[in-house]
Image (cartoon, rainbow, N blue to C red; front, side):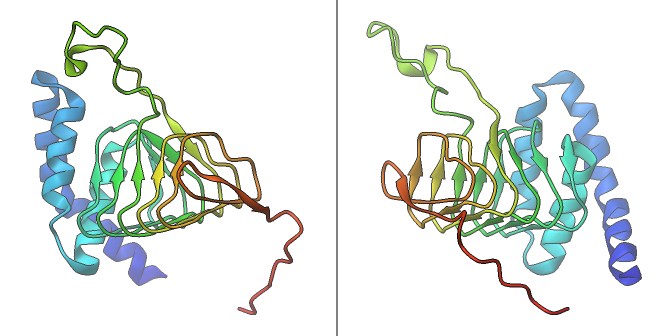
Length: 200
């Protein structure tokens, strides 16, 4: 435990020059744009070293970032306004928008968490979609969830939920629910499922 704390502290020091550069550039340019560039660069660092480096930079720049999380290779972030709580695992090649991820939640490979489902306006047919205003929403994902590979999340997910691989979540998912499909629909309630305790 002390060794892990030492390593995490060491990577904070290693990430400091990039953090200082980020702060300087953020004064002159859009903060999220600079942050995206930094996370894109760090996403290419392989293995555990890469994960420690990504977590260190995230701890220095995000709203909330617990020290004991894992951020997989190729994972990209688009907004500083992101909260990642203790015990979270983010698999490789995920795309993470503005969100809150609860404790002990697991994201498989290639999961996309969008900043809501209204990021692009299309009300005016005479104006290109890219020029129409959209709304960014901070998506909340609860504690102890499992989001399967390739899922796309555009709405809130409660605690203790399972999102099947490839699902597209467009409506809020209540606590203790397994959903699947496009659009994702409830398959079963997990409220009555027994909890298996593992001896430590």
